[in-house]
Image 1 (tube, rainbow, N blue to C red):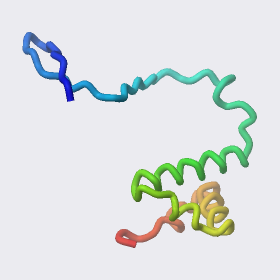
Image 2 (image 1 turned 90 degrees about the vertical axis):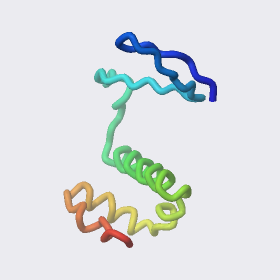
Image 3 (image 1 turned 180 degrees about the horizontal axis):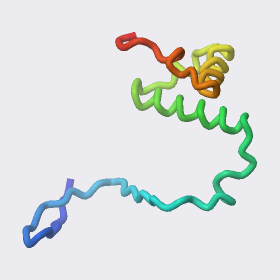
Length: 94
């Protein structure tokens, strides 16, 4: 990977060049563009999407989540809504 130079406090350091640059905006997003028609069902869909993303990041596949039965997926969402999340978290090493 090519490197550029970065100067800080009078010292010059090599700075790697990455193929993807991410910019994180810490300001509040405009609610009229982000949270349109937010219903319980859209929250559930967003939650399941995040669960699939986390599954993919951890295991490299979404088979663990997509292989769940509808009742199991609904149970995860209901536990989250009712703040009973500890009942759906498997023990370490499972």
